[in-house]
Image 1 (spheres, one colour):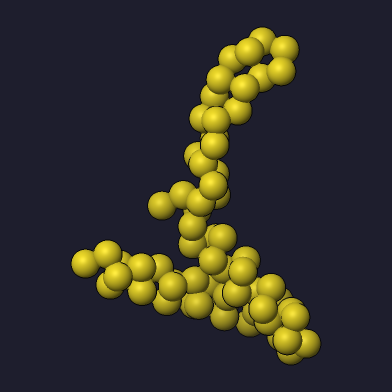
Image 2 (image 1 turned 60 degrees about the vertical axis):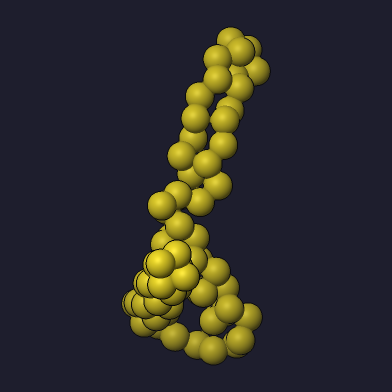
Length: 68
């Protein structure tokens, strides 16, 4: 699933193209990582990325449960 899809109109040619946006999982992981940084918790890069994607996976799973 994508986050923030949008239509882009080229300023010179007027051609319209669709940008599918980023993966929703990546968006969720970025948001989770922001909360870790704001909380002044120090993690090494690998641990922080792993924890952010674990949280993103949990959020994606919760969306599936809600949609059922």
